Image (cartoon, rainbow, N blue to C red):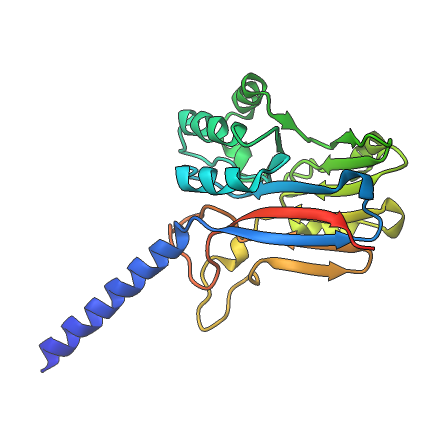
Length: 258
């Protein structure tokens, strides 16, 4: 009887680990539709494919094909594209896949600095990836309206300079800020006129035991004048397991909300 109980418990345990492994390796695209009254109607809709915290994972062909059908305008990598021990050839393969979806933009995460970041910079240059390291890029509609994409360097390394990104952004335009860490919210002021922040880093807690984890599950949160999107992320750190925070990427559609 005891032996049978032990076998049953072992089978349950193995099944649970298999479930957590599948959650960690899920290929999910969350569809996020966001409306803003100050978004220029002349742009129609802007579609962003946002993927963060890839870490050791290989971006799957399924994700690429699913997102291709959704026709994104730009691709944003929200940091932690890589970590120590990941071969740079895998980084090149992932970038090659993401480049097929549209222009790629990148912000640095803490784990990206675990590898030779100068070599990583060279790879970005070779693949035509625009690094938003305390800088901004501007897109203009046919009527002259502006969509501004800002990015800050990693906060944990104290390399973030929101002031420089804002200076680069100019005085007008609808603003989206990308920061690997959502803690950038503590530095955003009303006068910065940042409508949307995209971030990752937390992995949505990755593993929730009895509903508890050091970080809450990712999602969209309204913070005064700014909307914050925190992604659960695509990859994992330490254990390749997830519970209560399934791996995800995002297709974010931004439009005028009037």
